[in-house]
Length: 253
Image 1 (spheres, rainbow, N blue to C red):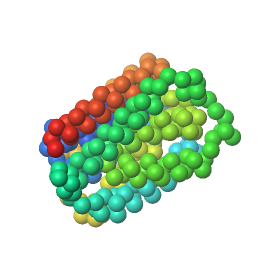
Image 2: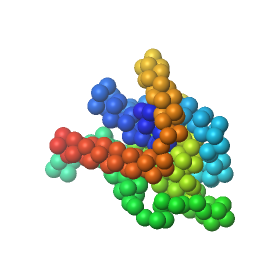
Image 3: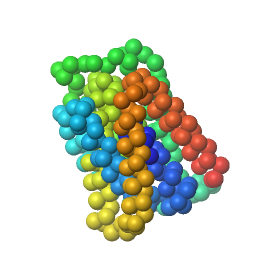
Image 4: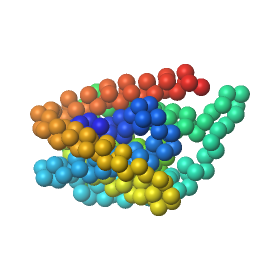
């Protein structure tokens, strides 16, 4: 998780949810809370190196991050609890199924955006005046709400938005996404914790020690890879995992 997150500014949440659900057998709704904390702490740790390199666009991070945090809080406090545990349409549809399908659908959409090879995506280097901050704010709020609902950090959506809407170069988008993910995810988990979520802190400690090692290794390799290589690897990884989750959830209906 740490290796992927530090290399791409995303992917930690993509790996965290499947690991928590399929390897540790944590119920999906609880896994969304754990995922927010793990990804938030990992992103915060991973962002340190990008701060040192001055590879974070602070103004864009604030414009995108602040409404994103509001979206997360609304989703965790009101939207997620309001969804019934199950629906019966002849086939039993559970809340867990809904969360995982939305999660995997977002991954597939993001992967298509990242793998789409067009000139405007390859060479996004807009001036600050060309950025539409109103769109960035609205995008931040929507993405915050959706990722808060599924317990994802949201880098797999945030990075395409920062590149395509904010005009950031890929590596700047990676660093900026990390700081956005860190604050909105940690604040989202804090909301759950305040509302009574029982956290296994020993489990979190073990996971974070392993993840921190991955971040350190990822920061080293990120200096040796081009933005195009990062983009292609990210898109392919997200597509494969997204398709796997969709197939697995459908077969388990």
